Length: 300
Image 1: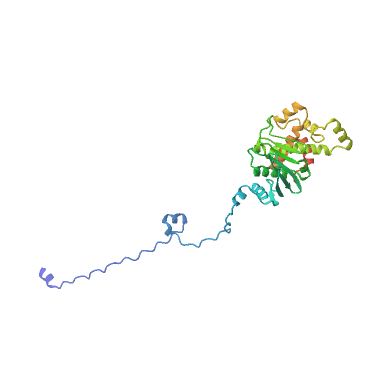
Image 2: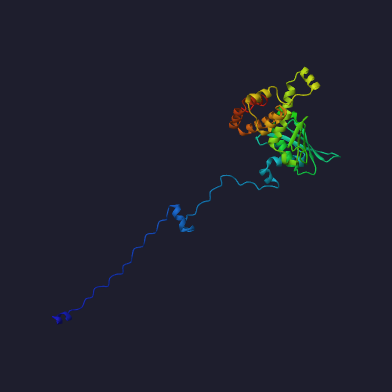
């Protein structure tokens, strides 16, 4: 049996062909950009850069940054440096044509400026040697003055800036067409300006109510307080004071002079604050508001 097996030719099976594995499928690019970001820069397809929505801003010239930061001061500086009439947009968004001309004075210790806002003019006298930046002061004065109703601007003729504090510690005083600020530019603010011009407006309105005969007698016995006709009755009907300062003034003098000036300043602030601020002012001072709105109606 063994012999038979050995005598038979040995047939070997052919070697199996090597198996070549099929090519692995190429990995599809990940479409989720949040995941693709982890693959690095190579995980993103190239894209065409998007066009900017707005053209690039032109480069700023000398002084242009200041115009962006404080456009009112920039306008005043331009008026001073060029002597030109320039547009001045106040904090209410109203634009006026403004010119400011230095006035040569051969004597004295004051720098004088002639200021024109629209068709109205006043002068500014700044005492030298104090803590005053003339452009800052003029910017604030023009801004506040331009908020004043045009038919009442004539009440102001002159502004004086004193370098030293007032002996009685007053921030400012007003009378005879003049507002005087003390202690340099520290007291030249919007609220104080409107308070002080309120005194001048009160006198203008009171004078306008005079007849020839009443004006004659006033010149003989002295002028009444610079408040509109009916103001004392309105303040009494409201039954309140605007603040401790006006209350102390009334208790000391028995008249509502400071009350009207402060009410004018607060009214101007309420107008700046919009309808809600004005409504709150009217609710606190209904009778006073009636007189103020006759003098200067709020915008529709």
